[in-house]
Image (tube, rainbow, N blue to C red; front, side):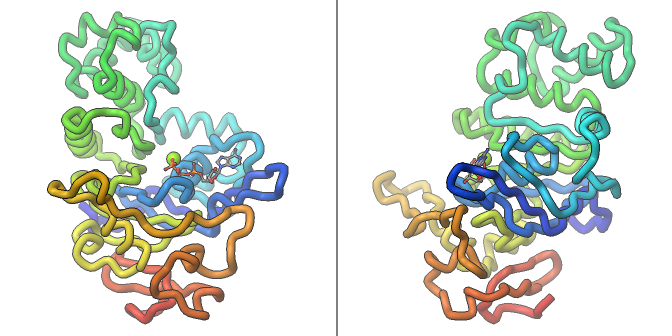
Length: 326
Ligand SMILES: Nc1ncnc2c1ncn2[C@@H]1O[C@H](COP(=O)(O)OP(=O)(O)OP(=O)(O)O)[C@@H](O)[C@H]1O
Ligand SMILES: [Mg+2]
């Protein structure tokens, strides 16, 4: 599936800045990447590396103090600078986003039936009866038991894992081509988390869509994704297919991230973290944002950082001599 050449999303030189009292927070800095048809791509990186803001910028959902520049092409159409009504239409129809806490998207005062049918009545012009039948079908797709009756419950009457499934069902109603999931399983216990990952794999197949899965958990990435984008300081450090990342990571930051995955026999107090602090986004250094924490740092790291191709779809942004320059 990852060999498919058609890209559904193409992000070029994306920048996201937030105006704050002390200056500008440079959350995303000249980020470029592609998402191909039908693939599941993990976006990993430490807290604050710009994962969520990248995707919120793609969706046109940045906070009021944020600005976006660069280009975001979805199925060939430029999204940056699009009017909010046109963006709303694409958002509702073709791109969907699932958040860590389903209650950010579910209305606690409305039954699931009202919330789901409303989407279909609005976007697909269905009658209530048609919309209800389709909504029940979608709840069955995400394996909600007794969907026919449970659709008439309120969100709080579901467990956390089931609520996340309801949320995913709701996002699938319009049959989007791209599903963006922002840490949808971090609040769930390990067993329920594994079930949601399996569900996402199944629905990708069934709906023929691409999925972007944001997480800081490399273990989750290993279980779910075809490819991974490693972010640091609002930039892309390395991208590669999943086997390649785990067997042949090149960027010092990716290696450090992989080293910090706990193994089963490790005691919690011996967990490794990457030494040093994340960069100050108000005063980013020239060149590589990881230079202050990198054990391979050299003078070259303060200049423009080259992109290097290691193998098919394995690209690294680093001054170390690794592959061929792009
Ligand atoms: N409205 C805002 N104003 C100022 N800074 C912001 C705003 N929203 C986000 N930021 C900053 O942008 C940076 C990137 O944030 P982002 O939410 O993308 O991080 P993340 O990689 O998703 O982290 P996490 O893993 O914690 O979710 C952070 O330093 C954050 O504090
Ligand atoms: Mg985030």
